[in-house]
Every structure is written in C-alpha cells, then in structure tokens.
Length: 265
Image (cartoon, rainbow, N blue to C red):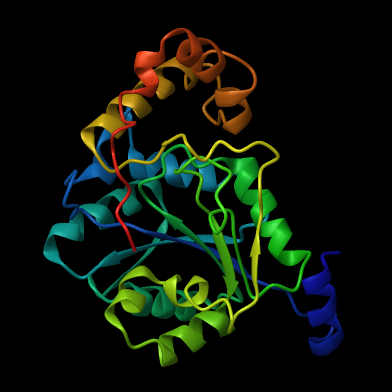
C-alpha cells in the first residue's frame, strides 16, 4: 500500500477510499493556435486522444474536463458528451477557481492536473508520477519542476486540501490563471517533489501550441498510432521509428518546432 494511503487509513479508518481525480483544462481560445484541442489527428480530436490515454492510467478514478462558461466552449462540451467524459464549466480567466470547484463537485481527495494540449501524454509516465506522490510525503509533485521529460508529458499531483489553500490564499492574477504557480513559486512554503526520468529529454518539445507543433505531432501519430493506439514515451524514444531512426536520420524533423518558445509564467 502506498505510504500516503496507509497514513490516511490509520487516521480515517480502513473503510475510507481515496478518490484520485484527473482534471483536464480545455478551451477553444488559444492565442497561437485557436481551436487546437479540437483539431483532428488520425480521425480523433486532440481532446479525445487525451481522454482515451488518460482512461488507461490505472491510478486515476475519474476524469473531468474543466472548460469555461463561454459560448464558444460549447464545442468543448459537445466533444465531452461525444466521448462520454464528465465536464465542468467555470471562469475563463480564473482557472484556479475553475479547478477548485470542479474538484469540489467531484469529491476529489487528490487532483492530477493535465492540460489538453498534450495529445502524446504518456500513460506510464503519468502513472509513475502519481505513484511518486502517493509513496512520498510531498505536498505537490510534478514531472516538470526540474524537467527531464519533453514538454507534452506534463503531470502534476496534489491534494484537494492544498488546492483549497491556494484558492483561498492566492490573490495575484498569475496564481489565479495558472493553478499551480502558487505552489512552485513558493518552495519555502510548500514541500515539492519531482519525478524525473533517468535520461534528460527536456530539450524535446511534444506539446501543442503552434502549427509547427501540430505538424510534428501528426507525423508521430501517423507513424505509431495505427500499430498501437496507446504508444508512449518508450515507443517514441527507445524502440525505434521516430527519434532513434526518423529523427536522428532526418534532423529536419527535430527542427520543425525547435524555434518555438514556451510562454513564460
């Protein structure tokens, strides 16, 4: 049994069950690539691929898509209904409050934060990041605090209690917009853990923010998806085709989105 669960069982009793809820933030609006999460790859939307992959993560009990109350995000709701995933609608700008109320409504004990612009989110990496949180006493865990995975595999894990603390205490706009910034900007207040890969691949960019990102992700999907719908990190990096063969022998593919700069927080 994971350390964190064992301690809570001792306090609350053996009949208590921890509920781990994955909240995926999604909206149509995007400054660099509008409507990106509804773009289609191999016959499914980016959001549908996100949900399909996250449903394979064994230590997630429920998935909720947190979108906005804006009319244009009715399209997100329609896609959620199509793929039969729960959704919550809240503030566009105050994403922290959107997360808080979504988690509260779901009765979440632990929140796994994923953004919808990660159609290559890796099942095993996300599972192990959650396990790392459960097996340690850190208040906040991510695989991004000290990057070793590519952008696009981002997973953050924290308790509802910690989210509620941020919701009540964090007042600055940057903290309301980016949900977990309050945690990792204040390491002297919060205990922070980072799940790391053995090899540093942080120089690779596999997230979806621009048309260049989309072009690269489509290439990866077209190469791997029809052989294994749930291909992951090891397929891309260790076992062939894309980075060991396609990328090393065709460096121009790496350059498709190497000039894209991540927005600063």
